[in-house]
Each structure stands twice: as structure tokens, then as C-alpha cells.
Image (cartoon, rainbow, N blue to C red; front, side, top):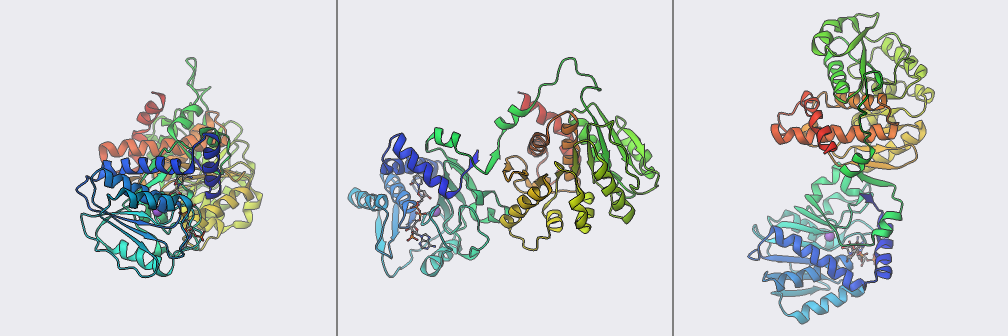
Length: 505
Ligand SMILES: NC(=O)C1=CN([C@@H]2O[C@H](COP(=O)(O)OP(=O)(O)OC[C@H]3O[C@@H](n4cnc5c(N)ncnc54)[C@H](OP(=O)(O)O)[C@@H]3O)[C@@H](O)[C@H]2O)[C@@H](O)CC1
Ligand SMILES: [K+]
């Protein structure tokens, strides 16, 4: 699913009106019907409804919804905010229709003073104040009203966006002045701000309503950001040949583990094997020998000369891909070996965990890195790597994009919606995964998965796309049986087979 900017959404709206063709008023009616249907699926007509409508088309949608709900027997009170005595044309027409319909319990047009209605548990607020046309943070009376609605016990459903939330960048927004919805009914496509972890508190559940905006425009318009869905991943997967043998399914090298962190090498290696690679060679300190042999008998071991750390770079000519970092530690000897290893690599590479921490503390080395590496930081690792001090998710994403550009590599930023930042500036969000996966070792599993996909011959972009999707899907399938609370990283490996089966269905 493409994520358009608000300017593109405006164009899409205009194009649909001209080419379908359909009047803008009828398009609003179509949106309002979809919104009403979605509301009626969740709340019965015994629920008292209070609609807050703004002066633009978001308010127009809200007024049309108020009319349709009242026609279906809901008791609806409406407050239209028209403080500048300026309504959009379609908002004004819907105001007229609402008044002429005479079905709503109460209609108040607020021009100066506002006496807020009583909002109680069991009531439903329809928030249609502002949508994609919001151009500055809410302030004054609107801010006060948002706070009043938020502190009430009523349920809140927002039209298109929670009022006060910008479609894209909320770095400079006033967060106290944003509606906290229980349900957001967004039109046609998700907006960029909906993919940010720090905005989830405003969005509640999100439902995307198809209002049949021009499929032709959607198809041919490029978007910088998009959401990877199952159909996209299915198209990327290559079938396993009937005559495949372990020599033709790729040989992967993992450099992982140190004394006290052998588990990371076990997890990455097992995940790599479960991702259908032909052979996995794990390079690990001597102390890890027995642990690895017993935990992952399928792997071939290559022992470092050191007892407890990774200390010597190895040739990669015999491997189709390398993953480096899980449980590596950050000792100076390991740091020196790591940079030498990355510089001499001849195969595609995934850089994770302590390998990222080492680079973060030796930032000058980053200029010496080869192109097309895949980096898989979690937010804190990215912050250290890119020198980010703010905890703002949008800013962090933009910084990750800058870093991908500077390194000519791929940054897979792990999180609520993991984001793959391509060197050309594109961003793809992952639609799988859940909070149960926020557990130690989960990242080591991802490294193993992507390394396997690279070794099997997938290009960097596809290996990262499929890898993050599979990893999240395994987590989603696992919680159906195990729940989120008890999920551990090994479970993700155990559910990889089911994830593959699902994608092959
Ligand atoms: N394309 C689609 O998918 C479809 C979209 N549709 C709907 O249209 C919505 C977008 O409508 P929209 O463009 O009229 O903008 P909207 O959000 O109503 O706000 C504009 C008004 O707010 C004002 N204003 C702005 N910021 C402000 C502030 N901080 N504080 C105070 N005022 C502020 C601004 O005033 P201005 O600053 O311009 O003077 C203007 O009056 C979209 O979200 C969806 O619900 C459907 O109907 C059909 C298909
Ligand atoms: K809204």
C-alpha cells in the first residue's frame, strides 16, 4: 500500500473528481457512507452520539455522517465550529442538508462562545474537526476542546485522522492538543504519521476505508513511502527447485557470539538454517564450541583463535553472504577485527547488534565501509550510529534515510512498524510483527533470516523485505498459540516453517 503525502492525497481527490467523474459532494457522500457503515458495525443505535465538525471537508464528512446516523435511528447532537464564518463549499452544503433533514437531536453552530456538552461513558464522540488539511498545531479554543474531549470517558472515533495530528511530520506539533481516538477511520490509505510508534497513543485502532479513489492514479503515482503487504512478498519469493541440493541453496557465514553471549550465535544460526539456506558456517570463539555443537548440530563451526571473543577476520570467498554482530561484544580487539572483516568482504553482508555498537563508537570508520550493506539497528542502536538525540520517531526515520543515503546501504530500523530505508530514499514499512517480539534475541533471529536469504541469492533489497516480513509473520503466528507475554526469540524460529507455509499457500 502506497503512503501518499497530503499534497498527493489532494491531487488524488481532484483527479478522481475529474476523471471518474464524480462531484466532490458525491465523493464526500461516498466517504460518509463508508464511515457510517464502519461506525454502525461497532456501536448500536442506542449509543448517544456527539459529532464535532470543523470548517473544512473533514467537518463536511462529519456532518454527512451525523445525517446518515440520525436517519438510521441514532440520537445525534452536532457542534459545527465556524469561528471565521468560512466553511468549505461541501461542508456548507452538508450543513444545509443536515438542518433540512431535521433528524438530528440538536444542531449548534459555534461562532463565538462554546458551551461544551456533557460527555459521559457510554457515549460516542465523532471527531471531524480537522483531517488532512490541518496546517499548524491546534491552539486556543480548539486546543481546549480537544483536551475536554480527551479527558471525558466517552469513546472517540476520528474521521481520517485524530484532529490535531498532522498527516506526515509531527516533530513540531503540540502533543497535548491532539485527539486520542479509540478508533481512527482513515480514508483510502494510511498516512505517514500513522506508522510512527509515538503517534499510536492518538490513533487507537486504525481501519482503512476504501472510498474508490482513482485506482489508475494510485497505480501510476510514485510514493516515497509504502507498506509491504503479503501480496508484495509472495511476488518476491522464488520457488525452491525440485533439483535443489545444499550446494545450490547458498552457503552462509555468521560471525557471532562471545563468552557469555553464545545464545546470540545459537539463535542467529538456527534462524539462518530455518530460512532454507543450504549450509551455515558459524565463526565463533573457542569457548562456544560445545554449546554450538550441541544446540545446532546442523551448523558447521569455524573457531576463532581466541577463547572468548571474535578477533580475526576471515576470507569470505567461499560464502554467498555474511551476517555479523549478534553477541559479538565490543572489545577493542573485536572492533579492529570487525572493521577489517567488513572492508575485505566480497559477499553481501548484514550488520547487526554489537557490530553496530562498534561502528557507533568508531564513526570515522563508517566512511570505509563497502556499499550495499544491510544494517539492522533498533532505535537506540540507530541513535548511537547516527548521533540522534531526539526521541521523535519521525525525525529518527528521516535520519535513518540520510544514513542509508550516506552509506549507500540499507537501514532496517526495527520497531513497531519496522522500516526499511533504501539508499535511494524510499521507505518500506513492515505490516507484520507485534509487541510480543520486543524480547531479547529477536534481532539475532532477524539477522539469521536475512543472511540466509542473501545466501540463497536474493538481492539486498528483497532479502531485507522478505526477511523483515517473515520475521514479523512468524511472530504473528506464534502469538496466536502462545500469546504475547510469553513469546521468546526461539519461538520465532519455531514458527518460521508456518510462516513459509502461509506464504506458499
Ligand atoms: N481525498 C480524500 O481522500 C477525501 C477527503 N475527504 C475529507 O477531506 C478532509 C480534508 O479536508 P480539507 O482539505 O478541507 O481540510 P480539513 O482537515 O477539513 O481542514 C481544513 C480547515 O481547517 C483549517 N485549519 C487548518 N489548520 C488549522 C488549525 N491549526 N487551527 C484552526 N483551523 C485550521 C483550515 O483553515 P485555513 O488555515 O486554510 O484558513 C480549513 O478551514 C480529509 O481529511 C477527509 O476527511 C472526503 O471528504 C472525501 C475524499
Ligand atoms: K478528524
